[in-house]
Length: 337
Image (cartoon, rainbow, N blue to C red):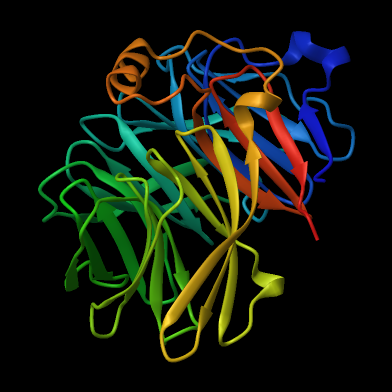
């Protein structure tokens, strides 16, 4: 059985978020969470307590995306109004605010000093984080990636490419240097979040989808390699367990609006096969439940689905699964062996 704990622990519940927690990002030493309560909270994985006072901005009432750079000593928060707010990780001081989109941020993806922001305005923007010798931080726009026909939901950065997925059921691959479109892959469902995979049948994309499936697509021939079923609602996050992968097998964790976390193994032989080896209930683990989204409740009831605490985001770090959503606390499980 997977051991379970919470951020914050029960005895420190006063430091918890007061509204739904929408996003997470983890490092070996920190967990950053963003919430509808208008704060980013940075937790120490060692002490299980806040490493900084809650990070807030007068102009931001809801944070929907977050990222951390240990190298730059920065915390990034993407808000519901199209802004990115930056604080210093070492002391929590505010260093910069930038309007990057005309509508709600969808996701943030950071690689070295390159930040990609996606948005409901149907574009993604690529920024260079510049730091002066005097300690000033600025964001310099490199490219705006246009072409998606619906909200851009997620992004990923490789050495020479940027990948974006959107509600229009496409995944687009762009040149990181020029911003030019290299390829557009038409999919059977919108990918809400995805990871780049190097094994299995060559370079591919593993993504959680809006129809409750997890799909794998080859980036070479654009073929769908697998459609993995098991979740009953939107799959919000996928995390690969890198240390347990081989050229012919892949182990990963998924989280969903259906209130569950699932651990999967995918194997490549003549065809791609898969199996769910563990399921964990976020709904059963929640201690401090928050009011559920009424529209989601009504929709689920109309479809005959049970009422659950939806999972908004999930991360894996240091042998632990971190989950957030319709609860004040972050639920933490040890990864089952």
